[in-house]
Length: 603
Image 1 (tube, rainbow, N blue to C red):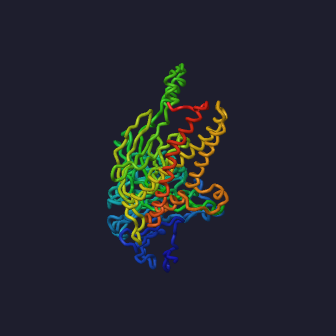
Image 2 (cartoon, rainbow, N blue to C red; image 1 turned 60 degrees about the vertical axis):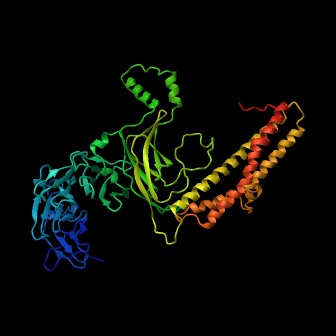
Image 3 (tube, rainbow, N blue to C red; image 1 turned 45 degrees about the vertical axis):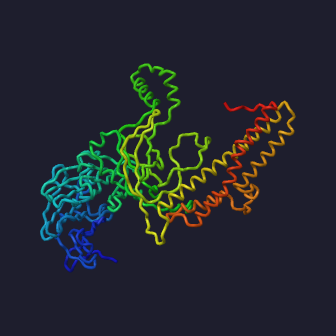
């Protein structure tokens, strides 16, 4: 529906800026404001309009304005067709605290204020404000979210070769102003400003070179990093429900800071502390959907935020290893031209043997039991990591696969409830707690239509499945190790002093027994190779049972039956493997040893 307000009979044409401001009133969702050279108001979502001001600009004739420091011939109208209208209103602000207070900013250096809904207006020339050039363009004007008399304005003067940042603030409805952008880098013009709706002194500025923020109302500004490009950001807003900061860049798309709430906790005293773990936002529990692998060259999809709970932490200084500390010391000596001493063999050996310093988040359930760990870099600054709402894996450990330090693992998904997390540092063989525990809640995303399993039932089922799979993994591992060892025993038969025949046949019989047990676990290998259907194996029993933990509904009767069937089928196999390991194999080794085979004994 086309709703742009139009000039009446005998009125001059409306001068709308390319970036015409439009806003929805905080006091009536059906009321909207827009502006040309004057302010328009609609109380029926744009069906009809009422002008609530006269011309609030300087009303300058654009063709008469100097170009390159002098007026040009009518035959040289370079600026006319290539630019927006001039002497237009470029920004509008309404106080959400007190109805009737409106603020206007123009492209020709004016700010206008009304306290009575537009019946009367007060004009402020921006050149009358200390430190602001008279030609400044008002990019943005924002009424304070908690104080009726406070207002912020963003101006720029780049069309006159001035790229300084100009952010001003008034606490008396525009009667007096102060410049609050002093610590933003010079030549960083500002486009937009947004105020946090929770912490009033937390402000964000969209600039020509990225996004800046301040936690003290403008006394000190900090440039945001974390992968944010230092390019022009032309608009910025806060999605209040989720507390997400959204920046609109020039030509590079949207950038979103998910959950800015940790910035509300920043204080000078906090930044002096060694470390800080910020409050954790409650998190929704659901099954994340997979992403299409190859949607084609013409389709683009931005990545979703990482699934799970987000842990935000601050570290004052890097946690450094012996090697890092030595390197820093040697760098200073080298720069000063001094000799670099050999640290000693003990020191070099300690460097060689130590693990890299890391931070570890320990996640606990409501009973204080540790359920998983998350690794994080031990680097200074504010960082984020995610926990994927899963328990630690209870699969059997493998010395070959688990030879390197790995604090993270993926088990089954947790159930809704209250959890907590603490931050620890691992360095030089010591474990130091850096923060107190922070609690948060895991919430179900959807209300269940059918009655699901209770968290207690899911927990009981999960523990039973983990125990069964651990026993299964142990049996499987013993059989794998036994197969390898039997190959060694076969080779040992050919190094005996006695005739190898009888003992070699016994090794082969034992090997056949192992293969039969493997078949009972996993089915026939030949059928698996060609995809032929096999009788239900224990692997299939566990797979079906695990499906009961793959949804937020929980295990059904079928899942529970599959688990119980697998447990019962594993029992006789486990007993046979125990006998094989503890009786059959040691007796066979002893026979080979007595026959002169080079078989080692346990110490």
